[in-house]
Image 1 (cartoon, rainbow, N blue to C red):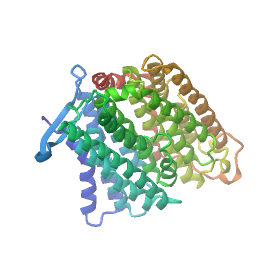
Image 2 (cartoon, rainbow, N blue to C red):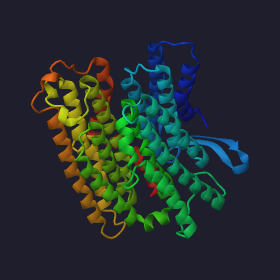
Image 3 (cartoon, rainbow, N blue to C red):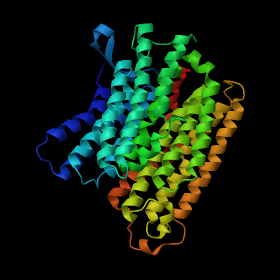
Image 4 (cartoon, rainbow, N blue to C red):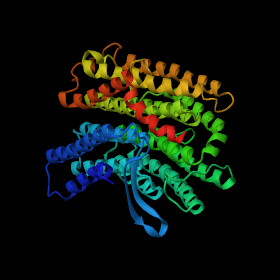
Length: 484
């Protein structure tokens, strides 16, 4: 097993949460600094693992396997390949950003940061688990911190949004549980690395779609998307960062790790139908985004559109399209995390989120306007940003995949989504920052030094991946090659 890097990374945030819970009457400053310390160490360790990952060997590395429930052949089984490692790095990065953007939380501070750290452990566990029961355990427990963070520290219809998220996710989790049970009863193993059912019998197809529907709800794929805008609108800023940046990536990750890898025959047979849903998600999400007047809802609906690219890349089933889909998950996580962080800053400074009530903010907020513009341009796929690198790989891989008839048409229809994205992003930036200035915002302040740290960090990542995407694609490709 070697040094237990993955166990330490996964459970370090949880250890921080337990320490905070047991600490006798800590001050708010102590809570924030301890949370930051644990999130920072987890991020640093994930970078260490990223650079220690053996590019020449590939496969699953940093593996830890211990007997857990012998009666059902379940193991405490952790390991990462190029796919899991990329998601691990994304989670620890955005977990650190979430702590930093939560610095202004003043209500029940200890409880808030405890649940935020617990949420990070659950997400890290999902991306590191190679045993189906362990995977499901982390997947389901994520519901608890998310529900509490939205329902207690949210705004607006927070109870409604939290309950809606809970209902959708429980339904998806039930389907995943049923799918895992069928897999176990038909294979006798829970080891993800050993399961591959190449046939297309009715029972194998049933297993595939039970798992797929559970992941499609989390992605979220049209028509299972309606929980996302409500959850985003009413969640606190840091929770929106984690929700858009990492949680919805659980769906795409599950599709690649379980659906495509374990059921290649069914994935190939139903690829045209599932890719059609991807195109609908792209175009529908982009069209609805044009109609939004709330900044948070605008970014939430844009996430539905951009995750459609992930779905398209997955079910075009080529090595390049799957690599592009994984890079799109990472890129979208960073870009959307930055966008939600910027919306939080705009709201904190102006106390407004509705686009018609804002205008001319660039004069008073030059840093916020510049960073918001960079994030927006990355979202529409400007060359030199991670958004362009990811979408280019998805489209090139999909167009040339030959996975099914009319795959070229599907790809061209998906590309139309970029045109609509450019429309709503540029229109939003013009109305919020570059329109006529409004008198009521003459005294608003720009981002302070503490607020600049997380947003500049994400800008740096967006530009790094945009200029040199091979830093990730070389690693992602090692995981995808084995699946293909």
